Amino acid sequence: MPPPRQRWRLRWRPGARGLAVPLPEAKLPPARRGAPAPFTNMAPAQKSCQTGKISTAEVAVQSHTSQDAGVQTDQSKDAARDFQQEVQVDYTRLLSFLQRVEDVVIKELNKNWKSHAFDGFEVNWTDQNETVSCLHTLSYPDAQDQNLQVTSVSWNATGSVVACSYGRLDDGDWGTEKSYVCTWNLDRRGLNPQRPDLVVDVPSSVMCLAFHPSQPSLIVGGLFSGEVVVWDTSRIEDPLILRTGMTDDTHTDPVYQVNWLPDAKHGNHFQLLSASTDGKILVWREERDGRLALAEGFALVAQQIPRSIQLKKLAWGEAAVGVTSLSFSHFDPRVFVVGVEGGYSLKCSTAAQTEALHRTGTSVPLRAPAELAFTPHGGPVYSVSCSPFHRNLFLSCGTDGHVHLHSMLQAQPLISLQLSKKYLFCVRWSPVRPLVFAAASGEGDVQLFDFEKSSQKPAVSIKQTTAESPVYCLEFNVKQTQLLAAGDATGTVKVWQLSSDFTEQGPREMNHLEQLASEVTD
Image 1: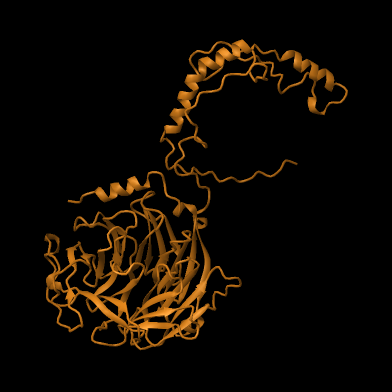
Image 2: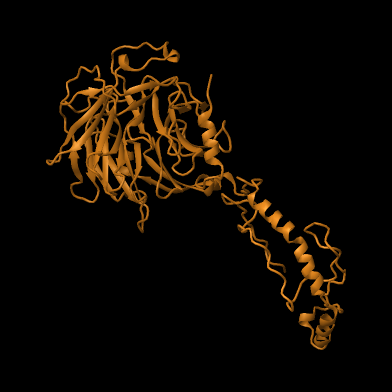
């Protein structure tokens, strides 16, 4: 019975140029006299890589009997003698042949090595549902019993721990409701998906959180009350180590975005940034008494937002502009983009010096950071994400179900994609694939988009929840790049494992991204 056939997966690795192994431009070694040669009865070559006509007596693989010579007993010596007698090589002609075809062979090998014919070619026989698979389904039953939703997720500096915050993003009187921050170490033996390694009780809904970029145990959170707090997960009994408290400097609306900012004045130190729908973007520094003090700040006032021809239809006033999301440039630490309740995105700078027309008294004067307003969405913007591979590109999404691909050099979007008939709550660029991003929808889907495959439809749409419960947040894992975490309205965090289709960069992917960025709209 023949052995079963094996199923093979063929993949061209990035950088392959038609040959599996790079070949240097070296000359073929001359034939060595006395060495066995595989060619017999060769005719002169006609400037080609092919040989002349070969004798049909393939004695190298046939015997004169109906049985293989390797298994004969009584005739094995005679077969070997016949084989030796029939293999007669003219080494002078062989050497002459090799010298004649050497240049042609080297030329063809070099041509194959430099060819781009198979750039980006990939054979994938796996089904779509094998491209992304659910690795973990994490939840905290006490939070689910309170019908709390996952409002934010974050990976720690090692990539092994995922944290989520619980609160509510829908309507209702829930501002003072007790909520939680939970963490799971996915590398821990005996991981219990319904029993977090750490649970932090919080007296107000936690709207957002972010792990420290280099210290794996530190998490900053933004609360519905307007406070900003920092927890140290290595302190099991009392993890709260820093807080803003409720002062004149504290946000007066919920905090929807928190970030760790490198402190330019103190080397490896970090400051904290928070953004709120009260229109303020505040930077906090650590004080010795466990308090966060306001170091500097910005305020968005409609009157100070740059006007453009495309935005004339909007009514500009003097009211504060509520900030819903924020993303810093990966190339210029002074540049950041914010999404606001009015439906548009703004390019901003921490280097701004103009004082903001903000009436609320704070301990430090606030500045007006906005430099450019982009063409708006059809409703509030819920998420923005700056490209880690191009200094001018960013994504935005919102309640109109569209994702906009923007260049910071022009107001109009380069591309506008409708990915959902409902809200889109979060969008994130891949940290390893320049043309890939993920979006979380109000229809319960996580959509993975790959501009290399299509500029119109998602490469994969993952059903995270049933009954179309919204997916509110998602984050790629920068350290373990095959992992993507997404949190939803059912109080569940799912960790999705991505195939190499979404983690291996193509050979011309950066060129494609540059082409997208250079497109100019009318």
